[in-house]
Amino acid sequence: AQTVTQSQPEMSVQEAETVTLSCTYDTSESDYYLFWYKQPPSRQMILVIRQEAYKQQNATENRFSVNFQKAAKSFSLKISDSQLGDAAMYFCAYRSLVLDMRFGAGTRLTVKP
Amino acid sequence: DAGVIQSPRHEVTEMGQEVTLRCKPISGHDYLFWYRQTMMRGLELLIYFNNNVPIDDSGMPEDRFSAKMPNASFSTLKIQPSEPRDSAVYFCASKGSVSGNTIYFGEGSWLTVV
Image (cartoon, rainbow over all chains, first blue to last red; front, side, top):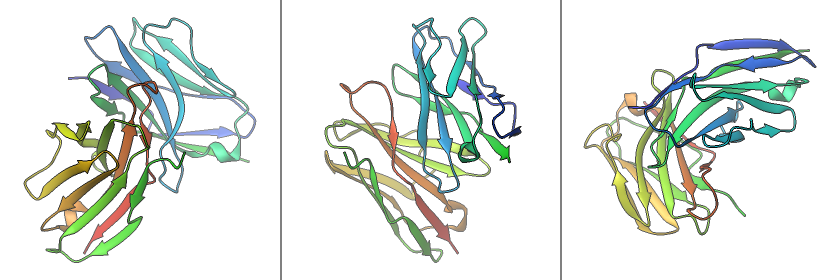
């Protein structure tokens, strides 16, 4: 079974600084998708960024970028120029081609003014 | 697009009562998912449908839980009878085969069973 591990229960960053959230996963498949979702206190699940495993280029969305290391099964999220509104729970998620989507335990990010 | 719509947003009920959570997926999406989020177990996939047909319900915790999708625009998750340990946030999500591989979530239904 696929598993997703987020080893950092909590992280903090100073406003305007950069922070990296870690995620590793376990799979025997070669084709799959990876996601980072943001969950603010309102409990919405907001897609931050996605990566297709067949793409070597790391995905980027404005201040959010990923470091996708397929061989190492690592998918970290980098948030640049952190803002107060970035404070939330961040979930790493893995989805296989058969749609069995699994989430990590989450990382709570605090942004200090 | 209105997004995935869930109701109720919050519900408090007494143990033993029946609870029905509702979901309207994004129009045109042919996959619908029900997730449960708790502090202890994180986000769990309960069940998902494809073209209104349940594909995988292995995540449904026990017989007290049931889910239906009578048509492409509506699904329910029912708990009968409810127990305090069912207290959680229940998310509905949908995905379209032709709209990429991203699953879009509703805002969740907060259930408290007392």
